[in-house]
Length: 115
Length: 113
Picture 1 (cartoon, rainbow over the protein chains, first blue to last red):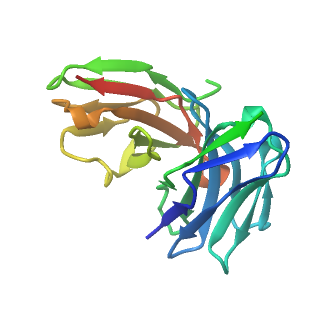
Picture 2 (picture 1 turned 120 degrees about the horizontal axis):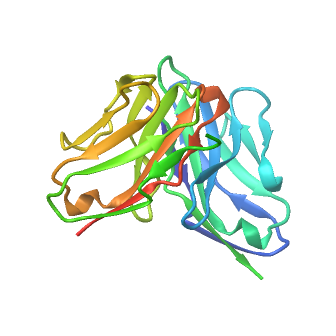
Picture 3 (picture 1 turned 180 degrees about the vertical axis):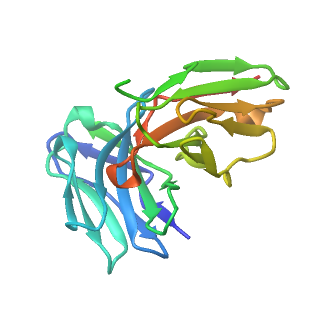
């Protein structure tokens, strides 16, 4: 079974400071992992994905995430926050067993940027 | 089209009414998914199609929920005899294969009054 836990429901950072959004996963098979962002009244946008290639994944808008199998973590980071980063972020897991296409979402982390 | 299109954008239904939500996936995308997102929650899986075949419907909450994709492109999610707990945003996503990621539509916000 696959599951994902986002450790913080809300994160607030000042503009220009680093961002860290934490995610732990559980999977019976080698997982694919994703981070999606959702701005108010907008659809989900893919930030980055890990699919068993390089463990450090770079995404759009300066975000990156590192897959750590030993810690079952996939934390999202950005060196310097921008006001436009304020949104809801979802960590997502998909087990790589044959025929499984189901995505399991975390409960989300709301990121607030302080001017 | 360039993205996944969902209609209507908003739907208000009286309790007991039937509703139909439409999803137009990206042209050529084989896989199509429906998710339900309650207020303040992450999306939850409802059902999945590969072409016209519904391969997984384990997330449909009751037999009032029905989805179809008869020609392997456009899909419709139908909810019969709507209840207040059906109020949510219904998201559609499509993909070529899972390895390439999934593209989500903007969703249909259903409010049952």
